[in-house]
Length: 445
Image (cartoon, rainbow, N blue to C red; front, top):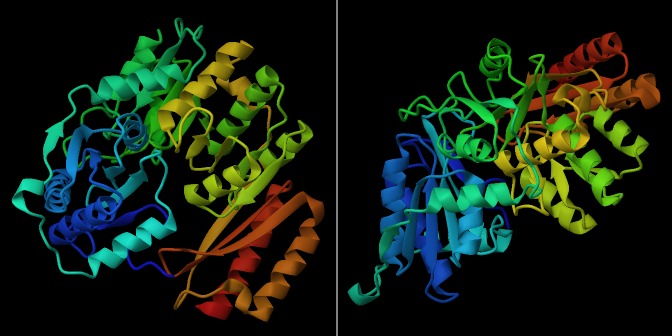
């Protein structure tokens, strides 16, 4: 059954516009509480990033859950994966994060986690949507939920992050720049790396409610690149607003994206565990990673874009490592969801274990040239519904032979068709994508 409000990662939108209005979020909290109450009276952990609207939505969720008879544990600013961890370890039945991740401050969203620290199933999301259709009814006064703040939430999560590394790992001697995007990890992430011995220079750690992700963080790596070179650091770590994704910068100021980070983690695991476990990427993952992993004897499969689909494929294959080029990386043997800080620690573990620099480790795979053009269309449509486009794709693939691939994908949020081509020959890739994008434009614009 198609969902009305939930997308691939909770509910998101512009602050004050449907569905992200205070009254809707109040009822959303109540609806989630009603679904939870049917499984027995429980408690919910609520965290948020640093957006100014977080105060409003936190209060609305607290009121809605209380009206349904659910107790609330409030953490204040906390990375999304931190809420997943606390929900599981504090024996809560539900985790809620108020965040729009890498979006600007004027957007916000609500993400949910199950008692296991995983994203909600389609069935539970549909049950919450069904409750939203009912009139809001408050439980008897004696049954109302209570709320309290968790004073040691940050400390608990910091210790969890450190525990995902080998007990012998010592970052002494490393100078690391950490860009926290003026977001949820602005206090937590620098503490994690300092406590492991690194010399830390923190940027993007002065949130004011409206500067989250503004010219900082993983969606704006230029700031971190400059800082790494300026401070002559060994590497840089860039998180996004809710710290569930990460990009890194090597000592030369070059970006190390999610595909390269996945490759580094996978190769380190193979070396130390001896397991020939595969990696789950997405339709957007660079062909160079697939080639390098297969050359190393590791499996590779592509899932649809979105951590939910990566997770599904990991569970199906029984593998533990997967993620996206954007830096949303899942290490299921360390945590239950994408975690930027934990993923960065796994890369540092590989770096320490190998005695090599981040620059050397990333050069273990050769990224293929890749270019994407967004073609604006009149209305959302399957690009392969056109025989002309389908034939053009087939002809392009024949010209690329085994040295490249073509991807046409309709955007899930905008009237766009993403035309992406990658291959071993940069000039051919750029020429082919221009030709194919023009055909798509003529057919659908």
